[in-house]
Structure formats: structure tokens, C-alpha cells
Length: 67
Image (cartoon, rainbow, N blue to C red):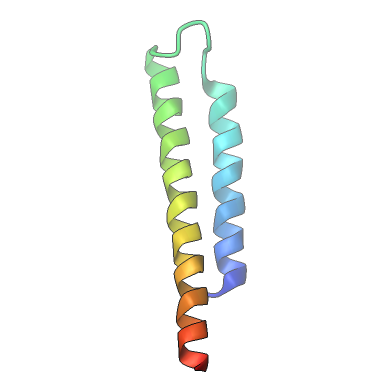
């Protein structure tokens, strides 16, 4: 996976976070729809962390292969 594709996926995950934040009812965050939005936010955050770990591991692999 190229660096550009990783950045595109991170941007999509950030867009999903912002969309799900608009769906959360902060007066009752454990309501049915708000719970689903909170799960979507957590899933997007997990995806971003995994993509950042992947990008970092690719950088390490590239440096190891150069030597």
C-alpha cells in the first residue's frame, strides 16, 4: 500500500469521525443512535491508529532495507 493511499484512508476516517460527531446527542449519549455514532467514532480512531502503525512500520522496513 502506498503512502498516498494511506493518507486517503486517514482522511476518510477523519471525515467519518466528524460525521459521527454530528449524530451524537450530547444530552443523552447512550441513546440508540448516539451509541452507534460513538461506536463509529471509536472504530474510525482505531483505523487511524492502525494506519499510522502501518506507515511507521513501512518507514522502518525501508530504512532496514537500505543498509
